[in-house]
Image (tube, rainbow, N blue to C red; front, top):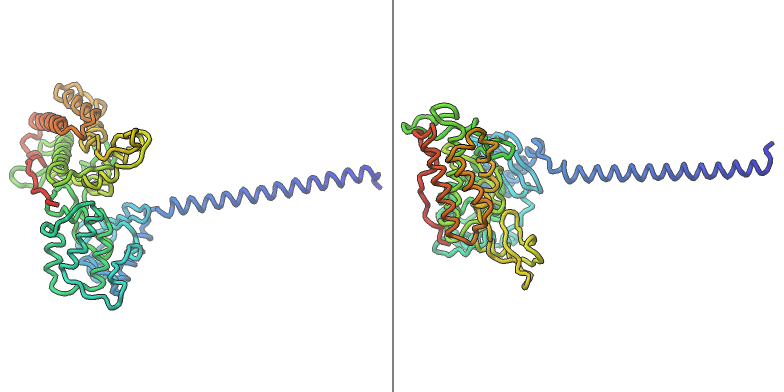
Length: 443
C-alpha cells in the first residue's frame, strides 16, 4: 500500500500527463486540419486552373449541348457538334475562366478562345429576357453592336463608318435574328479581344484572323507563338522561311542561303513595321501594355502578329486607364504603359510617357542583339551600331516625342536592312519589308 503522500503525487503526475497528452492530441488535429484546408485552398486556386484535356472536352461538350437545345449558334457549331469536323488537340491556356484550345477545323489548325468557359457566365441581351420582345431588324443589331464597341474599345463609332463586321454582314441578313443568334453575338461582343480582332479584320495584317464562332467560342488562325525560354524567342526551326522569288516553297533556316540570324532580322523589321502601323495608321494610336514573346506570333512570311490583345488599348481608353489617383510615379505604372504623377494634384497624367517601340526594344530587341547571343559577331561594326541603337531606344522614353520615335525607328530600320543586304540571305526576299500601310480606320 502506497503511502498517502506518494499516492497523491502519482495522481497529480497522472493528471498532468493526461492534460499534456490531450493538449498535444488537440494540437496535432488542429495542425492536421490547417494542413488539409491549405491543401484544398492550393488545389482550388492552382490545380483548378490547370489546363486539362478532360475539362476542356467537357467545356466543348456543354457548348454542343447548348447548341442542340437552340440556346446558342454560329458558323462553327455544325462542324463542331454534328459533322465532327473539329478535332480537339490540346488545351493551351486556362486561367480565371479564360479558355484557349488548340484544334483542327477540317484539317486546318485553329485556336478556340473564350474569355469565360460557360455560355451562361455572360450577361444576356436585355431584350431577350422578355418573351414578347419585338423582332430586331439588322439595323437595330448594328446600333446595339455599335454601342457595345464604344463601351468595349472606348471608341466613338459613327453610323457612317461602322466597322465592316456589322455594317455588311449584319445588314445583309435577310431575315430577323433568332434568339440563339442574338445571344451568341452578344456573348462575343462582351469579349474585348474578339471585338478588337473583328474590328481590324482586313485592315491590319498584324492581328490574328478570326475564322468562325460557336456561341461564345471563336476560332482564330493557329500561328507559332513566341516563348521567352527560346533563344530566338520564336521556334524558327519549325517555321519555313520567306518565299523565294520564283514562288517556290520557302526555305528553312540553313537551306537556300537563309540563316536563323537573317530570319531574326526580318522578324525585327516586322516588329518595327507593326509599331509604325499601330501608331500612325488609325485615327487613334494603339497602345500595347503587355509586350512579351508569348503575346505575339509569326506567319510563314515572318510577319509579326498580335495574338493576345487583352492589354491593348486605343488612345481614348488608354487615357482613362492612366488617369488615376497617385502619390508617386510608381502608382502610374499600368503594366508596360506608364505615365507620371502630378504630386500637386495627386493624379497620374493621362498621356503615356513611354512607347510601344521602347518596350519592344527593352524586352525583345535587347535579347536578340545582346553580345552574349551574338558571340563572335558582336564586335562587327554594324552589330555594334545596332546594339547602341537598341540601347538608346530602350533607355530613352519617347512616348510624347514624335520626332525621337521617328528618328530611332529610322535608325533601326536602316541598320537591320543593311544587315540583311550584307547577309547570305539577301537574294531570298526580306519578308515583311514591303512598307505597305493600310487605310486608316475612321472612328
